[in-house]
Structures are given as C-alpha cells and as structure tokens.
Image (cartoon, rainbow, N blue to C red; front, top):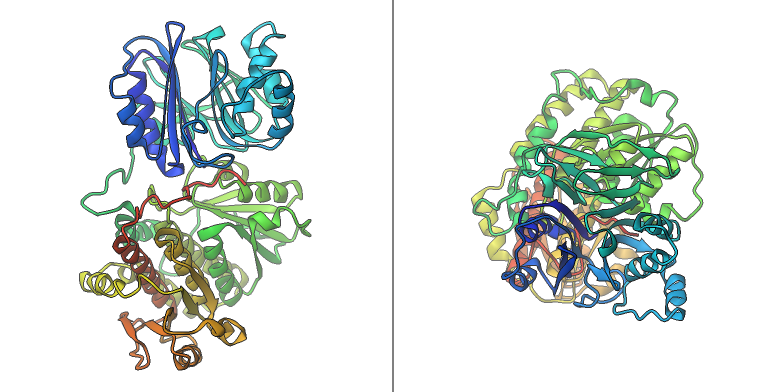
Length: 604
C-alpha cells in the first residue's frame, strides 16, 4: 500500500514529486502530500482524496534551486483518510513519509506523550518523526538519531525523513516494504516505491534490501545493512519504457487491460511453446529433483490463479498440490517438508503476506519459485527461481491481465512437469501445446460480445447479491469473477462450486439473487446444468455463460464453440471481467481506483 517518492536536486521539486506520485497513485489514493526543504525552510502541502486535489493546492508553489523533497500517496491503515492523517508527518523541525505498519507504535506513542509530545494524527507513522527528534537531543548528529530510531521500530516500513538539522540529506530505511533509489548524469537522486516513477529521470537504480538504512545527499549515497555494516550501492540499468502509461482511447485502464490480454498472453507464450514441449530457459531442471509436492501460496486474485493451477498440476503433472492463503499460512505453524516445491504468486512481487511466506519457506530449506510480473521485485530477488508473466504495467487496481498471464504460466508449467514426469503422452502434450497457442484468439474482445454485455449489465444493478458458480477449474474462475464484481461495483458477490449450492447457499435463492453460471460444454456440463436448474426452480435470476443455449436462463451470454474446456475457461474469464466492468460503469464508480483498495498490498 501507499506510494513514496523523494528527490534531491535543483529542478522544480514540486513537479517531480507530483509526477512520481501520479505513477504511484494506484497504490493508494485516500490522501497525498509533499514536503520540500529549501534554504532552511519547509513548504508542506496535503490534500484528502486523489492527487488532483494536491495538485490544485500546490499550483502556486515552485522551486528552481537546490532542494530536498519527499512525497506520499496514502492507503489508510491507522486513522481515517483526513488531511491530518495524510503524510508527510511533521515534528518540530522534521518531516517523514512511511509505507508499512509500525507494530509497536502504541507503546512508543505513550512514552512520547508522557514526555509532553502532542500528536496531530491518528497514524502509526507520526511516532517515527517524534521519536527521531527525541533521539536527536541526545545524539551527536541526525544520522545517529535516525539510526537509533530505526532500531526502536518494530514492523514493516519504508521510510524517508528530512530534517532542518541536516537540510541537504534524505534519511532512508527499508524493512519489509519496497523502496529504491535512482541516479542520473546530472547527479540528482530519486527515491520511489517502485521503478515506474523513475523512468525518464534516472539511468540506474539500486533496490534496497531488508534492513538497509542510511542517507543520501547531493554527492553521497551512504548505505548500511541490517548488520550495521556499510555497503556499496548495487546499481542496475533502469528500463526506459513505461509500457502502457496511457489509456489510448479506452474509458478506463481496466478496460484497456482487458483488451490487452490477447497480446500479453502472446508475450507470455513467446519462446516458451515449441512444437513438442514447453521451454523455460529460466528454470534449472534440478529445481524439481526430489520434489513430491507443490505448495502454492498467494493472496487475492493470485490465490485464485493458484487454485486454478492446482487442478492442472494434479491432472496433467500428476503431482500432489496444495494451495494456501498467505495471510493464514504465516500464522498457523505449518508443516514444511523439503520434498515440497514452494511456489509464491504475486503481480507486484511485493505482497507483504506472500513475501513473508516465501521467507518462511527459505528458512525451512525448501526450494522456492516465484510467479511474478515485476523483475527485481523483492520476491524475485529472494526466490531460487522465477518465471515472469510478462503482463506489462497493470494500472487498474482490479487485476485482469495479471490473472490471465498467471494462469497461462501455470498451464505451461504443468505441461513442463508432465514432460519431466512422463505423466502425459507426447500426443497429449502436442494437443495441449496446440491449445496454448490458441489462447490469444480466445481472449480477443469482439465488439458484438462487448456490446451485448453492455446492454445486459443494466439489469444487474440492484438485488441482494450475486452467486458466481462453476465446477472443477471453473470454480476458481467463479471466485475470481465474484471478486472482480465486488471490487469495482461494491455489490455483494460470492463464488461457489456449483455442487455446493444445495448445501446451504440455495436458501438465499429468490428473484433478487443473481446467479452467474459458468457452463462449459466440455467439462461436467450436465452436472453443472443440473445445479443451475436447482436454483432456477427456486426462482433465482440466472445469467448463463456458455456456448450451449440454456432454455432456463433469464439471460444468456453465448461464448464461441471451443475444442477444449481450457479455451472455454479463458473466454469465460473475459466475459466475467467485462460484465463486472460494465456494471461498475453503469453505477458511476471509478473503475480504476475502487474505494478502500490499493494495487500493491505491502502491509499485512
């Protein structure tokens, strides 16, 4: 959650900070703020809501000489989205921005209040700046005070702090939340939570490791590691391509990203699907030696992709597979055995709960693999092996093409393992490879289909809820369809296995309960159809998604005839995404930035 930027240089600091925050607004948009220190004086601005409000507040402010500046766009954890709770937070002569959660903030706050400190906000972050200034009174310089402050914090954080006592420096610390620094030939320094805000400004970047802290000035980059040993920065070249930065005529980024799925899946397949096998040059076959089980761990949409994968690994690869919700797995003292390949899935590679489970697996001596969209992310740097999904930049908070590419990667990986395990014949593998090559065509959005869903969506703006139902691999798709709808429409929706309806949920059936039924022709069609008929008999409103006409449906979205249920899966994925989009548009919601959500969940 939350986005952080920082800058040291002589350009218009305000514009650089605001431009960077715009690239990070998807990470949080409850409030935003900046603080600029120049000529020994601070200028600070905060605004509730989206970044446009902060831009309006700062329209008459500019700097054209050396300054240090920090900025923040917030997703609220402690304290409501108010101007007082917005970052940067102020002490008597210092400002701080922070991403993460300070778990011992209540204890520190009580001690500070006993010392006579008055708090302006409800946030955990404010304790950092007051603790720093308390330590500053008993330290030889600001860095010593900052170092002591970091040692007193418990939890996850990425921190930038500026203070009048050393007005040419930005102090930083990173533990559990992402942060990096970029440089260029003009000797400027840029901080950010991800590399996107730095593209176009920096040539090289250093990704901080957990435990790193230090300070940066116009001519120094000083980094210490978690063992308090000074280390040299490790710079790598920064990509100069912002990929899909503009909407290109689409109403929303989410709509654009739904349409992009055909091309990004083609990118995901590129160089990996040969005539006879799957090729993952990034994998060493030894990774799978001695492996008798795969454990998949993720959150949200990535968890649904993992559930989908579990069907394919057991069906095609014939390997025992279990799926874990990362936020639960962390705390239940799981049994972890070294014959298990531990696989984490994350669009960003920074999801806090998932990252912690990866650390658990590494500490337990398990082999680890990450399926991720962001190279150089924390998970990618930590895991033994990585498969990148190649989805490109995904700006919409509700994930679409990330899910599509994750499932595509898992399908390929299940066939890669099937070849290793001899669990499929070559003829069966060839058939699957042919299907993989057909996915880009299956997910192309046709105008007639989209128009049909637009018109139908106006009938689904009320009621007391939605059931998305499917069987087998279409159950995870039902979960994902329900998640997409609730994320952007704020309507209640649940995903269920079709066969579970009679075990309780059917009690809710009435005309105001909308059932979105996934009815693939090539997988358990008659059984799934029978389950839908049970709901229809109880007068539930039925919207069937199927290539086969269903006479008892109130609404019918006809998909194309496909040769296999996996291609039906991908086409139905497209339909539920578009349906959620159009319902949300009709309700007048901000599709790309739904309330209370953020793109990258870097707190527990």
